[in-house]
Length: 131
Image (tube, rainbow, N blue to C red; front, side):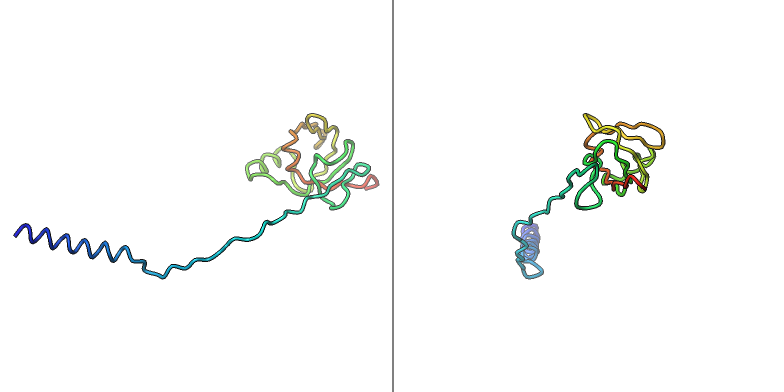
């Protein structure tokens, strides 16, 4: 009696395994490959202290002595919050004092040194001298 019970269980398990091996839905293969995508390069050039081309460029591309307006912070949310705490928020006017090893800028009558990597994450728009 025990052998028949085990055989019945094996048969039942075998049927379940065969049922599970069959896919419930037909297999569909979709080709998602696409050709190489060429990303356009941003073309910011320094022309007398201002960015040529697009109005907005990274802080590292601006000539020392230029007053700029911060337009966007391209960084993680935590870093954006920290920059805003330091006074480097959107629409804030700052003056670039130096862009040697570190970028030094004047923010709200305080000098602030930034790494080149961090300065690249701050997109600015130069303000004309007569403004």
